[in-house]
Image (tube, rainbow, N blue to C red; front, top):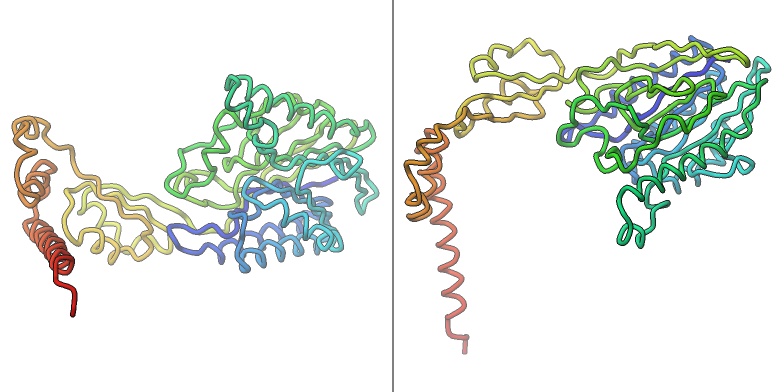
Length: 404
């Protein structure tokens, strides 16, 4: 039996307001092409198809067309809900997806009520797939427990409950079947890689330690565990092969050093699974350029259609960011990183630095930060005049005699 594992599409995600819809269409079409070329029997999509619980019409069109395209290859498609997906929406559309040979698991269910999927492939092989959608801590640790109990006990309750769920879901595994798990979880030993930047990939609230489960909740009878939730592709040590496939392309600047992929698994009863990566080519490159203004500007015209985060090491000045953006139309972030200031300069000012009118204080601040710009101080003076002029007019209106 041949299986394709993918996860964490995050369709609908933008990059500082720029749509990634075209890239998502390309990479999901590439994945469908891989499934067709490899003649896979089963596709496991391990959660976070969408980036938001309320996806746009465009995002829904992209995801559902991708699932249908995967099913058109002749493979059985199994998709589970991640923490970014709305399980109610996935459950509502589930019966329609089933007509297209796509099984959707929105919530954790008992094995005999859909939690363990029994399926036969076109080659006549039989698989059992344990379906473990994202399990929020809120569904396990109640509010009264959070108020009264110890945080370590909360974690034990969460991981202990997940262990029991995994045991129940994997109970139908047999020696004569290919036994698989599709789960959206944070497993001990996983690495998120570089810390996600503003608007980054894995959301911190769902990857901190009080949402983790130990790898040994998955039994050695499993041929393969297909994980979603962590965007860095990696294998987790355990009693069976446990893998995160990772996101299909760089979703934010915290993911730029990764080689994005899908995983192809070949498994048969009574034998270890064989696992290999198929690397993806779609999606625009995300790059970070750092340096002085001259060093940054030397890259102009060499970056193609890459999305850029530009960090300029120079004192701030009016129009600096706008000038950089003119040279680099694909810059989605321009950050001014001023050189370190001389601390002795601030210390010499002492307490007197807090005395004076706003205009004087602002000029002292510019001096402390090593910013040269009388024009900027002039703009500040204009804003002050406008502000105090507005206040004066309001006071005049409040004290004006009422009309006869």
